[in-house]
Amino acid sequence: MSEKKKQVSRRQFLNYTLTGVGGFMAAGMLAPMVRFAIDPVLQTRERGGFSAVVDVDELTNEPQRFDWQIDQVDAWYESKVTRSAWVYKKEDGTIMALSPICTHLGCVVSWQGNDDYPDQFYCPCHGGRYTKEGVNIPNTPPPAPLALYEQKEEEGTLFLGKAIPREGA
Amino acid sequence: MQMNRKDLEQFIEAKEYVDTLLIPLSPVSINGDEQGKKVVFQGELLQIFCNEIEKYYTGRIFLFPPYYYLVNGSYQNEVERLNKWVGAAKEHPFEHVFFLTFDHFWKKQEKNIDGHLLWFPTMTSGDLHSKENQSLIKEQIEQIKQLITSYW
Ligand code: FES
Image (cartoon, rainbow over all chains, first blue to last red; front, side, top):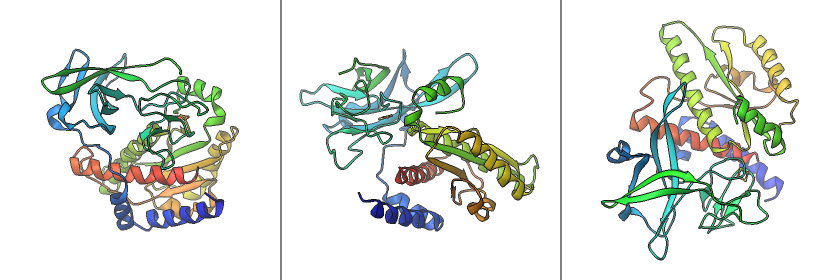
């Protein structure tokens, strides 16, 4: 994109955003919707370090983002932290649950986050990219694939545990 | 990244990737009147906004501790002091400096401060945990995130 074009869209964006609450909210509605709401049924179900994340029926071949909360306790604080995963079913039916944390410096990646790379995960910070399997694409900054969550399935519900890092590709 | 030892160490190693500084401008008041409660509420909200933004862009944004100031103090002096803060932070060459605030007084000082002021109106009271407010807040955060990335 040329610098000039960028300038214009930045200014438009500023106007749009800063004119007031009305503009703000209208713009908000146009923003791509991500699954933010945490299903109350799933909220409290935790078993041995695994949390209920989603009904397996809801999964498709397209990665979808799911959020859930866990209790994190360390020496000084006890807090609820939100975890997220990009989850989809592979052709053979196995489930992939990828951590959205970029292995470069930790920003949050999104599936199809950049129109130029429709079938990849994209990191907005320094343009890191990953295949649908979460494998880092050479010559982009990330040194390793996205971490994979430990998973298990019980009564049609997908439970996710810890995110396990994978070796560099 | 945030102002703690672990992040600071990472920052020093990966400096060339962290080109954006975010500073929350947070008024304080210990007055229990309506105005005071509003100020404190907005301070909480501001911290939520900043933490969320930092979480998304942790590899590129350094989140400074909030710049606190008295709500009834002189803004003229604040501008001077704030610019000193930024000056110190800018010993590392941050390319983009953003201030985030809900306090419209800064709007008038915009041209005197050394960075981009992101001011906008938001709620002044309410339950931060209710479903409706959560989705409203998330939408606003989404907008600010897009605004910041439009500068990159
Ligand atoms: S943090 Fe993702 S590419 Fe740098």
